[in-house]
Image 1 (cartoon, protein in one colour):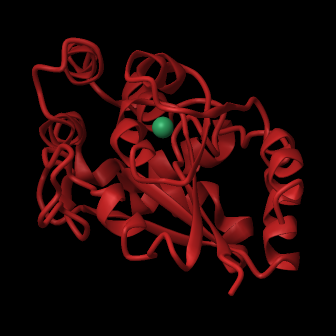
Image 2: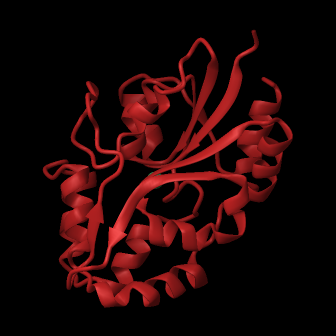
Length: 219
Ligand code: MG
């Protein structure tokens, strides 16, 4: 039996040109967000889960609608995304957005595309003064890191390698561990550096046209 192609794509900095969490922090958070971000991404002294939680706890819940309107206005989607979703549809290939970001801004940015993809992410909780996170995909038994608030590995591993060719598309530290279990990795930006360090094979990309050209050769 032929293996079925399945796509797992990161959102921030992958589907979008810029990281939307950073876009939100720059506009809505007090300046201490920068240090939290550096501790998560570069010094690695705060886990991803604690980091994202701390970042959103800097922002008042009543900013929700303002944030949604702002991200819709300023977020640019990476070139070729529309065409790539059509390619997936034509090939009966499921496209999953796998993101440690939050539902309210991901759905806002992707509102025109919702019928062509499935979003897996955590949820913003606006019931308290500051924004909190409701977790849906915490790692249960993850051996590779186990410290994030959204386990891409356990999602990918629900689709066994003998039945599926699992494609991961990503840009950053949060995509490093899932790159170790995926069958094909498309990488850009910081992720390339991390993959080089750990000698994990990948295909570099700039646009979704690049991803599509490469996959066309394989389907
Ligand atoms: Mg990203």
